[in-house]
Structures are given as structure tokens and as C-alpha cells.
Length: 507
Image (cartoon, rainbow, N blue to C red):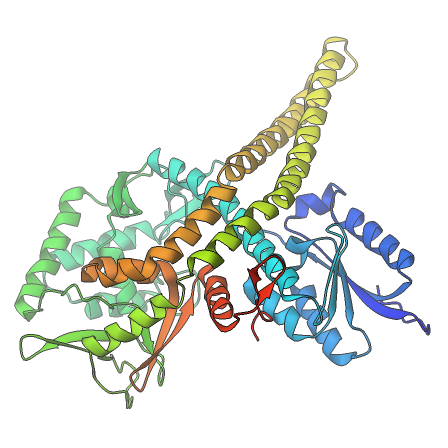
């Protein structure tokens, strides 16, 4: 794959990517990308010294060649040009954008007829950042359609995930069946605990002695896993899905009466311990300790003061206790950082509408490709059926090939439906995100604790508490919006028709 050529022309590397093995097998994406990029290199008198190709599959979603590309650029400072088909081939998220930007290279987006470099105008970089955001948003919409399919399966009684211990997944019939080797032991665990004569630790010890393991690895079952099994209604023929208890199609291992007796035993033991009722603290579950990485929890002292502190699960943590009022002010400032002024918000909405043309082309290409493949499968089915009637092929051959093509037909229809449904909300979702950014600060100031926590969970993926100071990590796309808001605030001059100047992303 590597070609090292002594030549006075500028050196470049090629990066191509597809998101599924099917695309590569169909010959649609990778060969087309490489042909386009190599032709562009010849036209621009660039010497291609290396090609990097990533094929992502459901089992292996990582981008090993993208990381290899970054390493190659570090080791070869004379190579400063990346050739790529378009924005969504190179970046999957904003972090990728910043990573490439820090390498101080030229990125040639061939299909988009755009070259980005350190010297590009801030307006050009900003519009490109919008494209990165919306490419990610389109992929997220496709993911949402997959989640819808899982929800529909759950509503019909099919559990959409890996079967818990005591059951196995039947990959042929796509069902969940009882595991004859471990179901009896799971049943005995419920019976032991229902008697009240065994603690969770007692049952764990019995499992270890019998060689029973609660997972798929080689480690002995944990006490928490024992408790999880005993509190899981899956073993009664039901299962929890997104906060709802649904009736499943799988065979129960235990009776509902036995399960209820076990839960009653848990309640009785909790009452005996005198465990206090959980309070609805505003910032529960939002922070981890910056010193040891444990969760930060809250408690009430002197009957009215709320303090947050590290759980100190690992021991020897020196992080202190902090009043809720001091953390509340910090969270308010964290939310305020995503607020955009009206002028900048309107400009971004215009940029979103401009980027809609790029998204529309991508959508049309994807739908066109899938439609053509679907028509080809239909033609094959029709021709094979005629050949069967004419006696040109056997019944066995017809049955085998028709089943294969019908499966492919169903896959193509499902993928085509996902694209069609995800396309409808492209622009609306972008505008909705901006409207939320404009309103988030006011919402935070006037919401009760539970609603504040919901808002913060929507905006933030993680927060670290160190010496009383909160360090946030914003969720996508709010991480980009924070940069937008800061750049718009720090730059007063105008750039092109009165639009605010935005400095380099991540600068």
C-alpha cells in the first residue's frame, strides 16, 4: 500500500472509509473513493505516499487506520496533505476534527471542492465545523431508527439484548431459550434466598463452591451479580425495557410467587437495617471525584444543609465536603457557556440551511444506491422464478436462491426506510438544538432540582469535582456550541457582510 517516491512535488496521504462490510463487498465506496482521490492527486500534481483504508463493522467499530494515519503524519513531517472524499469520511465527531486540526495539515475534501488549512479563513472553518456537526447528527438519526426497531421488538415480547445467565440466545431463530446447564442453579438461588436462611454472601459462596459463574468470563460470581439475578423479573417471563415492565415470549425459570417472596425478603431486610429514604438531590450522579475517580454523592447534615463528597470507595481520598449552593453556582455558569447571542444563533441557522444542500446530496446518493440494489434483487427473483417454471433450474436451487435474495431484499428495504425517516428531521433537529442552547440558562435558573438534573444530564456527559471546582465535559453537539459562543464573544470585528469573526476552532 505504501509508495515512497523521490519527487519535488508535494506529498500527500489518502484516507478512505466505509461504515459497513457490505459497502466494501458491493464495491460501491472504497474503490470509488480511491479512484477519485488518486485522480485528484494526479490533477493537482501531488505524490501519494500512503493509502489508509478503514472498514467498520458491527463487531469492530474502531478506526485502526485512522490512528495509523495520525502516527504516520507525526513520523513524517514532510507530508502535510490529507486527501479524503468528503467531510463525513474523515470525521465521526468533533474530537476527530480537533485532532486533525492540531496536526497543522491541509485537508482536501475532493467532492466538496474545499481545502482546509491553518491559513483558512475563520468563516470557512466555521462552516466546515457546522458540516461536521450535521454529519454526526445524520448518523445519530440512523442510530435512532435502529433503536426504534429494538423498541418494537421489545413491545412484541422479544428481548433485544443478550440473554441473562440461565438463558441463551438462539441465533438461528432469534429467540431466547432456557439454558439447561444453569437454569436449575438459578432456580435454587431464588429458593435459598426466599427461606430467609441465606444472605447474598452465603449464596455467592455456594455458587463459587459449585463452580457456577454469573457471567460469560472466567471470574467467580460477585455478590452484586447475585443480587442482580435475584431482583431481575426476567426469570418470571417478564423484562424491564426503558422503565417499563413488559411480558416476554421466553419461558419462565421461576414462578411469580417465588419471585415475590424473594422481593419481600429484600424489603424486610432493608427495613431491619433502617436504611434512609433516598433524597432527590439536584446533582446526584453527575460528578466523579477528580482525585480517585469514585462517584460523588450527597447527604443532608443538620437536617437542612446538603453537602456533596466523594464516596471514598477505594479509601484514602482527601477530597472534601462542599455545600450544594457553591456547586449550584458553578453548574449555572457551565450551562450559561452554551448560550448564544441572537445574532450568532441566526448566523448558525443560515449555515445549517446552507449545509442542508450537502446532506441532501448524500441522502439522494444513498437512496439511489439502495433503490438500484433493490431493483436488481427484484429482477433476479423474477428471472429465477421464470427459469424455475421453464425447468431451467431445479426446485432446490430456486428455494435456496430465493431465500437468500428475499433476505437481502428485506435488509435493503430496512436500510432504505432508515434513510428516508432520518432525512425528514435533519434541519429541524439542528434548529431545535440551537433553540435549546438559547433557552438552557433560563430553564436552569427556574427549574426544581429534579428538572435541573435532567437538563444537566442532557447537556453534560461527565463532570469531575476537584478541590471544590467542577470540570465539565459537554455532550455533542453542545461541545461545539460552547466553542461557538466563546469565539463569538471574544471577536467583535466583522467578517464578510457583517458576520462575526470566529477564531480557529479549539484555539
